[in-house]
Image 1 (cartoon, rainbow, N blue to C red):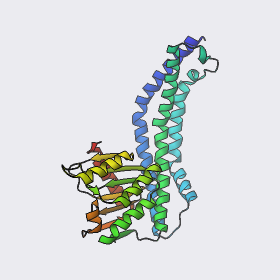
Image 2: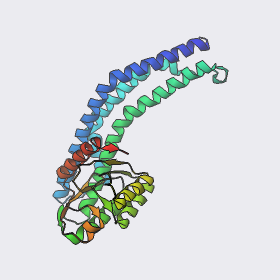
Image 3: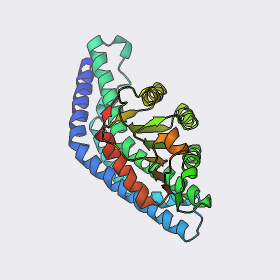
Length: 293
């Protein structure tokens, strides 16, 4: 087979990859949701064990996850292998001298390789991230129980700021924050900036600055400059903080000096999964309904 014939096969392989991507989208979406449900069942099992006073080690969590999702992972990998078999001939390019290819031939070859990598990332990679995320979440949940704190705690006015700071100090994976107004809380902002430097996922929802509201506007710019994704929502009134998807603090207080140091505000901090999941769901909805900046 001469190089041009091989390149035609590569081109056909990339077309096949694209067609299979479209056909497989619904399958992988369905499998992703199914695996998410199974991972959540494990989280609930971990929570029940903790409530009974049992200790859960990382090895136990891995075993529980592997047992729960093992069959589904096998099924997913089988589908992926079948897809790859269709392009096996196109991938056997060992005798093809890349340096002698024309520009058009190189483009075809490279586009096929990119399509293959994209397929892995958008399908297998997505499911793997769901499982890895569940594993990390289970370990963080165990850390909450081992901390000795109550599962849910009412926070009095003077406790809200210190609890926000302690939660940020605890963060290892992600921070989701909703506060209509943000200003005058440098200790908190500095922690967010430090976490961003450590590559944590940080997302913030707040209100757009009002005319003449220089303090809030400056804080939004500061957070943007630090590389934190921010969305603006003119009607948001909720105030809450979610850390590592295992713990939420919801409160009447804005993230402002007045709210945290002078006003009479109340709040609650909890790592009860059903409550945390509800707030994650609401955050995602709020994020989609807000203006990206």
